Structure formats: C-alpha cells, structure tokens
Amino acid sequence: MQHDQFEALVKSLCEKSTLPEVLDALKACDDAEVAEAAVSLTGQFNLAEIDGEQRIYHISMEENESGEEEEYAEWIMNVGDDVIKFVAWFFFAMFDMKQKDVYQAAGRTYQQPKRK
Image (cartoon, rainbow, N blue to C red; front, side, top):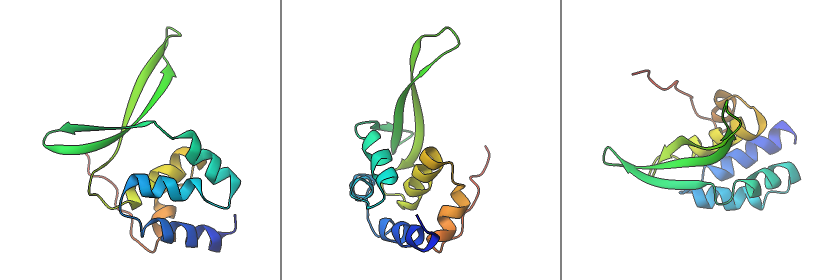
C-alpha cells in the first residue's frame, strides 16, 4: 500500500464513530492484507465495566511458560473514545507500525500515555 493510500484509509477510518464500524471498514478494505488482518480479529473483543468506564478489550489466547493456553486481555480503548486509538492499535498489532505514524497519517498529534 502506498503512503497516500494508507493516509486516505486512516482518515476515512477516523470518520467512523465506533470500533465495530472501523473493523467492518477494515474488512472491506481493497488491500487484501489489511482486510485479512481485520477478519482475523472478528469476535476477539469484549466489553467490561471497570472503575465506572466501559472498556473495550482485545482477547487472545497465548501459550504460557508451562505450554498451556491462557486467555490474554489487552485494553484497547473506552467506549466513546476517539476511534484513532483503535486504528493506531490495529496497525501496530497487525503490521508493527508505530502508533505515532498512524496518528500522523490521520493528521493528528500522538501523545504518549501517562505512566501511573
């Protein structure tokens, strides 16, 4: 995918308002690698209320040190957050792209999450 095509895709994804809308748009992407990566994520997200927030988690199975399959949950974003968080996560998780570069393609400034 050319950089200008990537930029156009990211900007169009950022016009969506929810993670499911973005995931559907990614599945329909002309770039086969992007579409396949999106399809592979189908059904791997869960919603949980924690500390009064509706959090969206990516759920995957990974092998632990003992060789047993273990469920792993990664917090992606909260319901109502800007979908750029999911778009940046998607391209980082699936294509090892820096989140900063995805934000830049969207014409936005990436801010490092604050450490607690």
